[in-house]
Length: 207
Image (cartoon, rainbow, N blue to C red):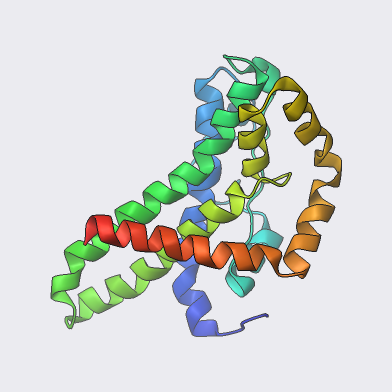
């Protein structure tokens, strides 16, 4: 399960830092836009990676292909539009940012592709592939509707008040449920095909 390929890890390092940082920055920025200044006062409205990195989640992403950053704290009662809608938009911002980064990286890959064979192009392509892959993994993983992942709050925002209440109640068991899904391989079996589907879709659009 664990992959200690040092070369692969070093190549993936910039992509992991960028993906995690922009994901959490997007959460904080949307929360701030909707009226909650909590991320601002906690120093999360920055593209400096250090305030965003959770080192265990960082290592997990490097070793097994999925991980997490330090969650942006949000006061849902300060969000304009109500708790459900506000939290849905804040939660959606992270995965959308990762998909946008993957799309921009795919466009960059398309622009560099004709120059492959030249040293600078080969290095650029080598860095762009993990940037695409890791951002898609982060997007899909966080869209899984299990607390504390973003997908649970996005789903809650689309449900009735009663359904949303059930989702919020599950948060106390969410970490345990998520660990069980990871250990049993359920997450991996879902993650792989969906990431590949998104990758193929972006490649079809760009190429």
